[in-house]
Length: 116
Image (cartoon, rainbow, N blue to C red):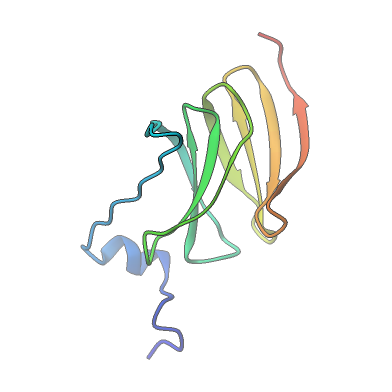
């Protein structure tokens, strides 16, 4: 028996057979998702990057949007979560890379890997 009924593993999520709608809307527009990553530090969260330059964090158990942040005016095309910390690195089509701290709800680093 699970201690927390609102928490289950990613394997449980995948095999649950219960699709959920995860919606993100900003200023009346629903941007297109472009990349995503599981948050290993919180079994209930996953991060999504959008063509609007936003990142969003969803609770896959409840379907609730937990947090969002616009970091770019360009499409977010890649994303990877840190294995032990609540950090996500993500990059846009122009080669800019950010590190976002989910617990602190802020960008904690950025760099440009390539121009153009």
